[in-house]
Length: 112
Figure 1: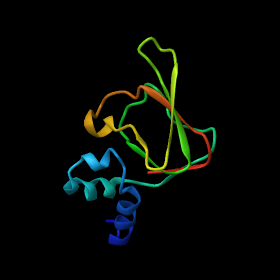
Figure 2: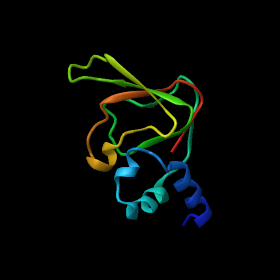
Figure 3: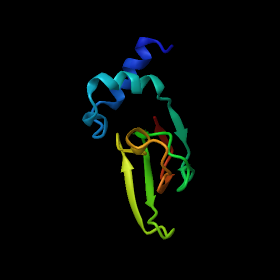
Figure 4: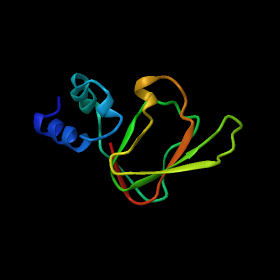
């Protein structure tokens, strides 16, 4: 089991995230226990459309471009995410669904 100091650091890094702020505080520590840091280099895909949605990502440092895919399979809208933005929230709210976007690191980025 993770040391309390590590969990506290993760919890502090995530404070202020708009999605997590909507989840009851009693669940925050359980979420932190399962989180891991992931470094992603610029230009590398984090997730692909169609991947099983089993992870939520929070940007700790850097930035990620989310390329949204409508139902016809054509990518046509992008959203740039940074500093505590998150994507893949459906891994918590609707587990078992497929990712409907592709996410690419715009710069070297640290994710949780």
